[in-house]
Image (cartoon, rainbow, N blue to C red):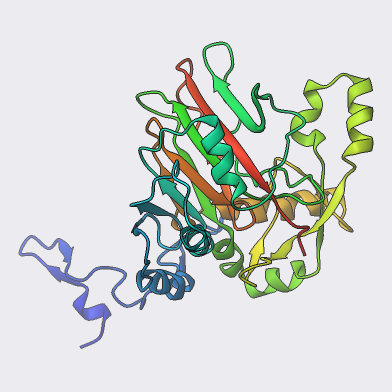
Length: 329
């Protein structure tokens, strides 16, 4: 009996009802269901990484995983402590593996926040976002009825720098009862899921990153000129190789990329739209619901993030310390 013959049966009334799941013959593959490029079905390229993460064990803490290939909540570490080098090394490895790690119930002072972040490298000073007045290394996002959140777009932090940040440690000081979640997308998975012809096309392609994409509107012409001299447009590869894992990932975002070098404006816009949409694939994501004194540490090389702006006019206050990274290659 064929698959087609066993997929439905006929009632006495003459109406046919299904007896098999319509996907039973597809053998777990992606299926295009419309001419508009809508695909459904499992993303098989996630299997190896998902299974690798399932097999990880840790000496100094336990981990609860979030997404298929991204996100792990760390249990058993107090970030206010003077942590040993062994614990810091294992946390760094967890960051590389899970791409973003989460901590709950971490009532850090500003001094402790900075001290923990510095265990992973020197910290940057952000030229466009106000800091905690006592600690210039801490960018302060203080949102309220008067100051709304505009970080709700997929991006990597400060990709307009010649050396964008390696990672960011974000501490929640005050959060609304509902809303204000942050989502993270695995950009290794985003690259690996691209069609082969797209991978070939973008292999040696360069993107031009520009601070003024997001921050230029808030500066007067004289300050814009001054900042342009200090932060000229920079070129980074569209396909970045992570300096510690050696894995390739997709490294473009609408916040800071002006255009793709060597393409017409129309070609650049079309390809950028396609590439940036990869971060919106839910299977590549995890989502974190903030609670007071929770801390998130993300690998800014490997992920993009999106801060939900669904809590206005409520208050949301978080502070971020960013670790200086290397030049993308």
